[in-house]
Length: 635
Image 1 (cartoon, rainbow, N blue to C red):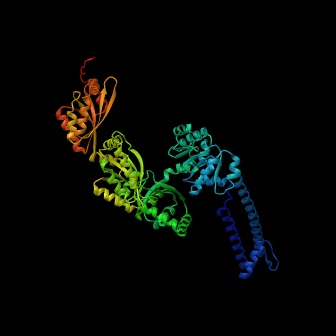
Image 2: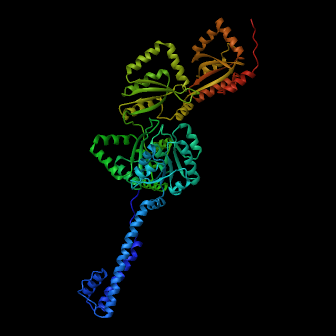
Image 3: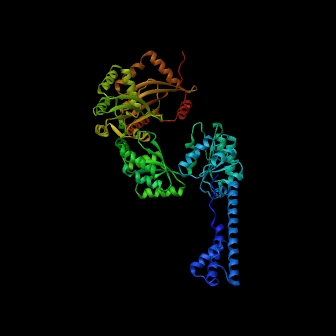
């Protein structure tokens, strides 16, 4: 229970006035009636008022005797009044203690606080998190023993014994002036009814509730909770962050290590908490985050002192800041939105602030504008996107490996797939690359498969993640690949790569109709520097596709294809397949660029062979099923 309050001045004001009036009356009477000098007048007034009376000064006439009687009676009355006052104050104090009047006054006065419902294992942990951030809390706990024997023993805790589903208890806890309600009881049914009660009393308040079972999470959301936390997967700190969400802000800044103190002081002096720090490296999908949780200047001082005492630690931090050009983000929590806005304005005035509540894409845009993010603290790396043929692999690898770098992986971008096809490589020695190229020459099937993959991937467009001893080496590799004409870009986003494929390479599916054995379509494609990867035949009724691998890149391949068709078994099979598919088939064709592909499409269209390019599957089947059937003899 909170300690006894001090006695109000209004209680002792009138006794003081009475004492002053009595002493004044005695002094004046002693000088005028008793004919005493100033010193004796003061002396006589005090001993008479105190009813002591030594008899050294006695009244001589009736007037003097009357004056002394009134002075003695006044003094006796004053003593009686003082005694009565003492008894009254003691009685009020005892009543204050037993009735909790002061406690109620404090509850009425609290504002911008959290109402914490439930003080069990989770509730007590959440309470600690709130106190760490200097948040005001009123606790509602059913167990009266916990409230009286544990909570009321701490003068800094405001607690109520009662049921949080009771509107009167919620009102007593000051829900009308609260910033949020946190519900942490272990009973999901109680949590649901508490949520309904809180939402009914205060429709706009922020409510965070605990769900002991995951199946009840949706029910709690439907009952009016803004956030539902399951301790099965979350802890007290997560509940705290959910509760503080309306007054938490993410700031993205740019400054050096030497500016840490000034930045932190701006945040902390406004009563805010520095929750974490995030370093945004383009090589990582998610930022590198570290919890901080600093609320006091003293904590900041200890951190900065530890940096000064440990040069290696300070150097590491400086390298991190250098690697991100000083660009990083903090989540900061504060007492209210107005305070957070003041912090943001102050940081902007100091030219630290780059943005507020930016998402990852917006942060990357800011990083591109204000700094170059290519160096990784542990091992520098970049992602290069190139365009070249299989024959250029050796030259490309020599440029990378001769600078002491490693080819970590390769990504191919296949049409129709949102994500690239990725394969680990891990080549750092030129001899390893030479062995790989020799194996390709010895195995024509493997070489053909790789060429097909390069062709499908935008006609040779692919990406490598390469690591190096330092950023200088990576920059040299970047410049040489660019000079050679291989490089399309560095650290490109997936969307940027597909834009490059549209610009520098092209793969299309062309729907064609011609008689079996005719090769006019193939001649047009090859004569315009196109490559034919396969041929697909569509079987109507069954809606099945028969695919034949071709990979025709020049006239020699075309001649070989024509010779194979002249073989009796091959001719019979192909003729039958062509007639079943109504002489309609498609070719997957690659070209060097968009212009070359458009030239191929126009030539095929002019010849009357083309039915369409890059058609949706449904449209292809509509064309095949509605086409005239091609008769063929049954033997």
